[in-house]
Amino acid sequence: MVKRAVVTGGGGFLGSHLCEALVARGVQVVCIDDFSTGEPANVPPDVEVVQADVSKPLRLPPSEVVLHFACPASPSAYLASPIRTLETGGFGTYHVLEEARRHSARVVIASTSEVYGDPLEHPQRETYWGNVNPIGPRSVYDEAKRFGEALAFAYRQQHGLDVGVVRIFNTYGPRMKSGDGRMLPTFFAQARKNEPLTVHGDGSQTRSLCYVDDLVRGVLSMMDSAEAGPVNLGNPEEVTVLEVAKRVIEVTGSGSEITHVGAMTDDPRRRRPDITKARELLGWEPEIPLGRGLRLMAGET
Image 1 (cartoon, rainbow, N blue to C red):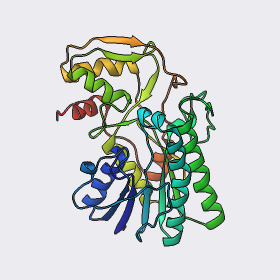
Image 2: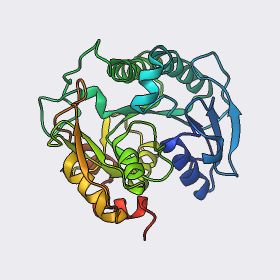
Image 3: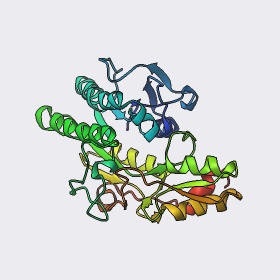
Image 4: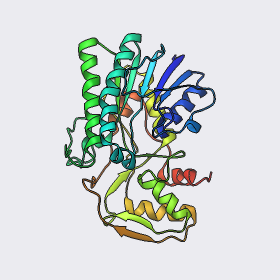
């Protein structure tokens, strides 16, 4: 059983929920975050906080496991700081892997469904190599994560490091920033103000949305395993963006209407994970359907 864990990016949306779940297990947790996108208030009170930038050389405290979640993840953050995003995904992952190697710790790397780009395979399996524009506006995040995966497996091959890579599909829940450019916090913020919900394109593009509690269970299952991955973590319940907008209006009781704006560059048309590996290797699958998750995010029970 893990007694001490380090979470990089522990002040962010996913990282803070991981810290919370680990503390609930009785794990001693250290959060590493420079709070460039995360928030100190997100970190649970029983967690030790070290303010540091993983893209710079650093020393991590001894631990049995490192969960590497430090990286700008929202479009507004990585588009505003493209070089920093690449530095965090590249140098940051390198520094974390070096420290995990120094402590002989297992390290779980947070990758993303963005490595599949605008996929030509549907649903997406881990064997799919992707359809990514390497110089498009989203490429700084896509390529940072793709490089991080390559680096992790190079450390596994050359140094025998105990690595696990999870490819995280769209996740939602409390502590998402309303202005970070991601779909659900944007829709909720607009609905609560009775403003039009802005749907990019015709809204027929699909997403598969996983509630954060389910996602955290998957990451911890990966942490507890000896699997290297990559393993998809996400909810295979596929829904159009237009349908998501309608359901947000419904759960908030908003008087908002829906308005269509220009399609985003390189926006994936369809996204749905094949989670066969997660089921078979980790015994994991999501339990919270979208309707319940949206009610939870709206503050209902």
